Figure (cartoon, rainbow, N blue to C red):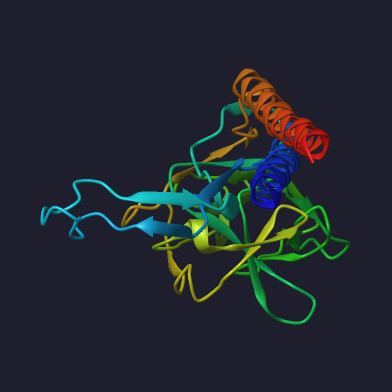
Length: 261
């Protein structure tokens, strides 16, 4: 009977973790460039009381075995990098990626991070930075007398300086992509970090070699589907209740055993 309690408890714990993942997705439904995650489960080891294929008393082989499972465990969180909706903002420093790739960000310690959040800002000296003040790489600076900023689909950044009639290029935005983006480590603040599982980044010009293109004046929204998450939350709740019911049933069976004794 203790086995029933352990199995049901593992199911309740797994569904609680599932609810945590769903809640985080829903909390970030309006987070720019957010990518939803899903929780993957796997069953635990089995007690093999009778093995399939073993010989029986009448010299025949057993067609099926007798295996008793030991519950479930959370195996991994899988992040979906499906494209989010691209919405217009009208802000010339907002840039959305349509397709594969990440913007490259330089952290204060000199390391690189990666993001799909293209809500850029200008620092006091005109450097293009993220909302947290992290520098976008390759680093580029907008002249203080710039009247108009243009970001081309291929990442070319041009400015129209006061007194000039033609824009001049001031830099080039690049994108990075990974063989396994699901292997990136989430750092918070809409940032990801390279890991052994993700592989090393490939940097290139937007629109080339499989990289996405850029859209100035637009932002990519979260790819969370609220209806889908609500359905999954109901499923997790029902599964949690069923496992709790199994524990209650086991307790009732204990009571019957005690009365028999």
